[in-house]
Amino acid sequence: MGAIKIFADSTCDLPPSWINDHEIGIVPLYVTFEDTNYRDGVDLKTEQLYAKVDATGKLPKTAAPSPADFISAFAPYVNEGRQILYISLSSELSSTYQNALIAAGEFPDGQVTVFDSLNLSTGIGLQVMKAVRAADEGKTVPEIVSLLERIRPKVETEFVIDSLDYLYKGGRCSGMQNLVGSLLRIRPVIKVIDGKMTPAYKIRGSREKALDQLLNNALSRVGEMDKDLIFVTHSLADEDALLLQKELQARTGAREVAISSAGCVISSHCGAKTIGILYTKAV
Image (cartoon, rainbow, N blue to C red):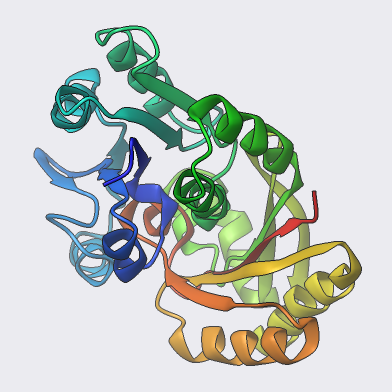
């Protein structure tokens, strides 16, 4: 057991086996259907989320963990004398970061450090894994934070949304935009820039064309990539994820190209068949 306990929240979308193997603490966000709250990844899985949306025709609301949730998660490790480093969902997207800061203030100075990933999904996960490895190497919390500050602006997060339906249901595009987009087979591409989800461009045509564009965008920057770890993260797009993994592994020379599945919070905003490629540029 190390002196430092690394925490993230459920939006980091790391594979469950990695979370278990590296003893990463996870604080779940909430997904709410009507008056019922579900803990992301604990009480509700992605397949169940989509079934509920199909049955009701409505998207759930999502909510950050409360300060009390963070206090309950952190306290056992603080009581063991361990330091905690929590890497959060972007503060531009959620109050999760702020609530964690409130919780950290309830512990002695220096016991809990909160770091804003300014990212989402495995854009967080990439930073979490760097922190885990640094902690395993005996780095201190300030040294790990310094490393993360260098890595954070170099995380590249780009994903293709397959359908405008969830953006429409979530109020992020109009009914007319949804109709026209569906007729023209338009798929928006989202990037994370300065901690915010930003529409980068649109791909018109087949899904295969969209996947080729996503792949080619990543491959065009192979020379800049940190070849340690690349993620292909998806929401119920297993076959496409395997295809992208195979191509990236063959054409980047990366040590590992890992596949991860998006949890309920990420999926509730993007919809089924969303898929992305996430990596870090070399520091």
